[in-house]
Image (cartoon, rainbow, N blue to C red; front, side, top):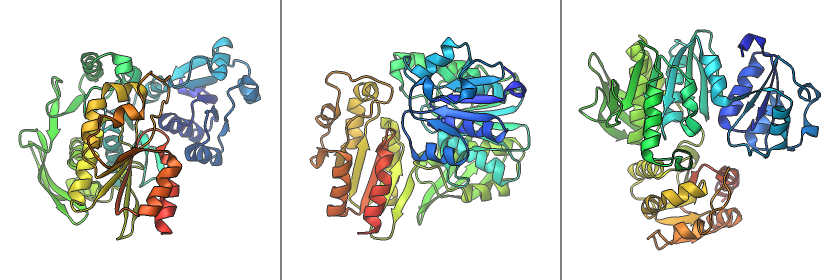
Length: 451
């Protein structure tokens, strides 16, 4: 399907962060955009305010008239997270509509453009957002489809006037194999999505296939140590090709030097904490320099990058109390987040509120989760957020709690969490998880600000 022939688009699962970016893209182009999601969220409400009609009833009777019957100029985009028995999804299948996954649509949009694609089991949202910000802030420009809401632009889609597109390439369901990038980044290849891949070897093979999608003269950047051939390595390591050196904390910011085979940039200031974010920024700098952007402009752009919502986002920081929220939902992400918190606030008691995401991920990485969570000072554990999965017998919050060696730990609901924080007034709070834990952010913020 050609973009120029699309007049109407319906999104099945429009509330997803990647789906909503595409919805905004098509709305900006002037197409009629509507969608369905099972839950009203702050993001779907924002889409509605932007003029996109959304139904929350999974029934074809709730569809706008324009989407009741098949039309050649109509595109239906769906997410694999939608249940196969969805009435709306099956309406479009039965009526013969043209259905595409989000990743396929990204492939259509990026075809013919200079594509920078960032993949990885973690780190891809922040990295792609930094790349896009540098290109925007320096005047190079780009269009971007991101997996988070960037704080600088308050959006997950950026619109540019040139032929460059930055995309977050999702490994789930092998979605990124629809892309053919000019520049590709692989930030990490840790075992994840084992419900899809079965084991780590199949996941790694998928990343190798993604790397093989590069255009003939393309460039592949990979975090040092990843088993990808013909790649340029990057890391906060003396042996990487593009490297961060002299890393230190100055106040509440991380400062480092960038060096590659041909040039260096001294004293780069970064608002985002943690070695992992320094490394994410390192590869973004390498790409910007490859594109010929002036080094001093790159340095300035990095310094004013404010981050991504739910990626080490300060919710409250009033001197007496600090509340940080993060999307971390994999053991390696949790470890990186905890390490960053400890580096910044080594003497404060850390209260962690964690919501596990998916029964399969909790089962597959229970020991790794337990090891990281045991390093908190206090843990409030929510029940597992199931997302697209059915329950697995014996896999629940208690299963995970029993493995955690921390003594100050308990399972609780969201209402209890808010009341507990109100009563105990901890000095350092961290909410982490990828489910609906974000629904307690505002209540916690209000509680702390009114304490």
